[in-house]
Length: 272
Length: 330
Image (tube, rainbow over all chains, first blue to last red; front, side, top):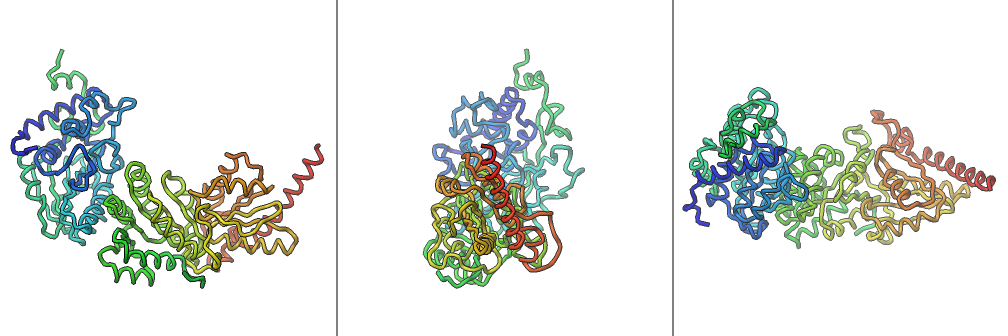
């Protein structure tokens, strides 16, 4: 696929609509947290950042990508289907009996690497993968997409210390920094302050970006990828949870809110 | 392999160290916990030895990541910490993930039961058999001597998936100086009895043998089985062995009645409608802060040689009464 020919903005819009459609059919899915990382995933998967082969999702030559914010990655379903990891028809059956596309993705879905329904595991496992790739002499990268809320889990910081100690510059963390966990704004619960400063203090090389400016996200990922500077790298993508859905966007409790069907229909252009 | 008694960990680590020279796929990770043999591994294989620091959650995550990249990983720490401090990491990224991805991670926990005698309850370990056997896909081994511990190395290489090796921290007498136990069947019969068989694991095999010796002096022959593979033992063979007895006693250095060896044997016998009556012997009375020798501590919590002899003698008497009643009611 030639990345330069793909209109990332148009793809992001399409993924946004598809995510809404999935949620309309399967209200058990978490919508708000699946809308904030769309531009991150679109840049990674359509922007020529990740090297992958949908026919061989676990090929040795792939770049690894761990989606740590499990619930908040329903937007990956249309992306993976569109890229050919599985049939598009599967999108009609999310959360239905017999489907492999659940409310929280599992690694039985082609394209998902590890188990991430429980939060705060992705970065640590990715750090082990980064070490394994280095020791094998592989030049592949490992990306992790994590939410800021799950960075409350202490295991992340054990991994963050380890990654800089061992100069794992093939490890790339992207934080979907929507600043809201289940029960409100993280600043009102346990604030991370400026995440770039915190990770920087742990020896990480950090950048910050508007997470909904898909070209900016793409450029930032391009700058990270393959850069071997002796430090693990983090991109803090500042995003809005529930982005683009009235009543949902940036609402403190949007993680557990479902928009009305009429609202979804209106947004999908299917108003009666 | 030597039959001179040595620490289980040293015997196993020696095997790992020898193999690391020839097999570039072996990786050793520890959580700031050592041994003299480990120093050799660190010096000889600096690229494949890593100390993650006092961070067991990360120990498991790093191990999972390395295993996903094709390494056979040995992760090493003190038993209560490598099981309980990071239980959810083990559940999610080893037990659960191994169901859909090939991975080989071997958790070596040192400090079974009371083996850290004077360190108190934080460093002693009475819950690990229960917790580790609660997870599907997890193999659980509990050797009784250093020869068995060393022989487990081949199982670690041969069998994929996550495994837990529960090692004693003390040097225990060699049980298998003549030949290693039958690793395929997962248990070894040390004595054959008339009416009753003691099924023990780890340190308690030594207690069982002493108790059997005492009872033999009193004219009662009891069987003794060392069950060192709690997950993959030969079920048919164990069923046939236990079917010959009127009573079976489980002996473990872990809390009684909380899902350890006792629950495993109960489920095993009930599921096969095996005839023996069961007596479970394990740690009674909760956590303890008292200091003493291991045998003194064992007597306090009802798993010492005296306590076990007394309870088994009583159990034998109950078996006799049961037999009399049954005969009387005919």
